[in-house]
Image (cartoon, rainbow, N blue to C red; front, side, top):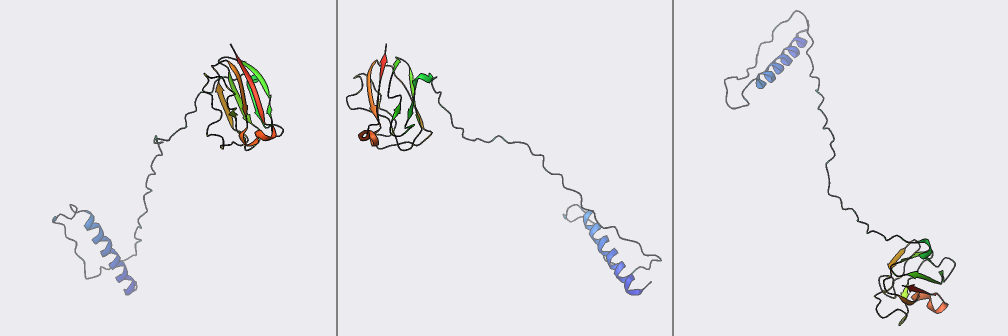
Length: 180
């Protein structure tokens, strides 16, 4: 066997032995095991293969769902609406459909937007004195887009007049009666 090859094998053996000696101690707290290196190479008749370390697969963490506090929008209960009490907002231009209707006390009227930039506002002096109905939220300048839905339950009987504020001048008006 070639002399250089023997030295390389001896150096590898010394390195492995030194590495293993460090593993057997008490964690570096000054125990008796002290690694020593051999200066003289040892002759071996046949070359032996040195085992290479095979990495041990690290177990992957088992994914367990962790409950997370996720805010969930709470939908307020929408009162049941009779299809007869649904008003389309701007289905064909600047109109409410139907333009006039009658509902009993306690009925919920629903306005559904089929056009953009409209609102529902009570006429000044156009609602019974005891009623607190103010129309869509946000005041006269607040408008809504297609898909918006506005519900209101009417508890005060009487005549109600209303309009779309931006389009009242072009005739977008409506009225209804709440009966006992």
